[in-house]
Length: 342
Image (cartoon, rainbow, N blue to C red; front, side):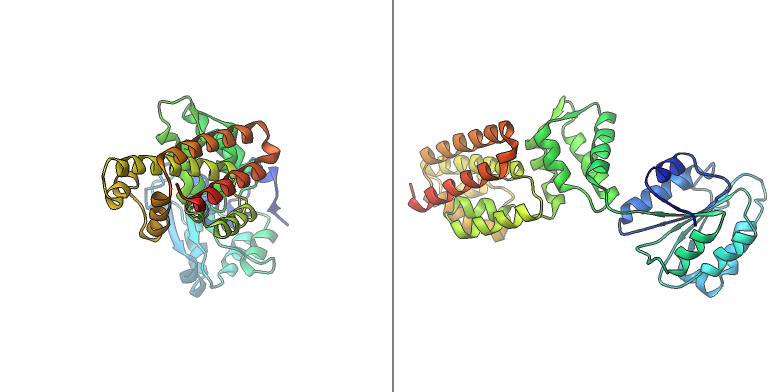
C-alpha cells in the first residue's frame, strides 16, 4: 500500500521517486491539490507549456476509453525529452487504466491525477494505493503548524516580520484552501511593502474579507446600542475561532470613522454628507445602524471610546489569556453607553 503520510509527503514532493511516476493527489483542499500538482508537473518536464511534453486529459472522458491513458503514457516523444500527463478526475471511473500501467510502467513520463475527496474504497484511490509504481497523497486543510510555516515562508520572501497579535488574527482568517491562503498573505505583504513589520491594523484592512466571518454585526451593534445583537454576534464569532483582537481593531477603525463624520456634522454638514465622507464604501445593509450610531454619539464620547479601545487593545497584548473577556467588556461598555445618547 503506497499512501504517503506526514513527513513522507514532504520528502516525496521535494524529490519525487522516478520509480513511482503515477501520483494521485486528492482531498477537500482543492488549492493544495492544485499547488502540489503544479509543482510536480513543473519539475517533470522542461517546458510545461509545450503540448508535446505536457498532455492534459479529463477523467470522465478517459472513463469511456481507459486505454487512451496507456497509449499516452507509453508514447515516445518524437524529439526526445521527458513527458507528463495531467488528469483532472471527475465522477466516472478510469481506474483500469492505472491497473494496466501498474504492469506496464511508463518511462520518462510522470502522471499526475487531481481529484476531490475520495473514500478509501474509491476505485481510483485503491488502484493507486496498490500499484507499486504509484503513490496516493491526501490533501487536507492546513493545520495551525502548516499555516504558521506558510506565513513565515511568504513573509520571509518579502523581508517582512509580523506582530504576534497580527499573526494570531491572520491565522484565524486563513485555512481551507492553500492557494487562497497564499494569495491573501501575498496581498498583505504587498500592502505592507516598505514597512518592517505587519501589524494587526494591516490584517484588518486587507484580509478581513477573506475570512467569511461577519464582524460588522458585532461592531455596528455595539456602536448603535444594540446590546443583545452585539452579544449574540460576538458569541458566534468566538465559536468560529475569530481572534478577539481582530474585533477590537475593527472597532477602533469604526470609532475613528464615526468621529470624523461627527466632526463634519458639528460643522453643519448633514448626516448623509457626513456618512458619505466618513464611510465612503459603506454597504447599504449597514447604513441604518451606522446612522443610528452617528446620530446618538457626541464628539466627546467618541474620543473617550477611541481611548477606551486603545486601552483594551493594550491590555489584550499584555494578558492574551484574557483577550476574549477584555474585548467583550469593552464592546459591552460601548453598547451600553450608546443607548444613553450624547
